Length: 89
Image (cartoon, rainbow, N blue to C red):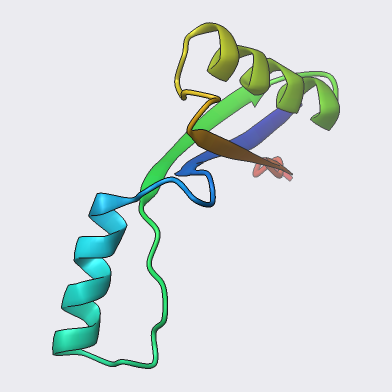
């Protein structure tokens, strides 16, 4: 089966996020002070051919760890997996 796996990398709470802080200042000064926080990060999308959703998630987690796509000391990751529906039906 084919899965869409999203890897979201952001700074851990307590770690400065200069890009997010800059965007936040701009948002507050130019748009609305009702937005109280802005965090920036990386968003990667993979298409994974796998037998199960769990296997697809584990493969991307292993990829992120072994290829050092993030620094576990300062970053946190979130992995989302969705089955890609067969469009041939």
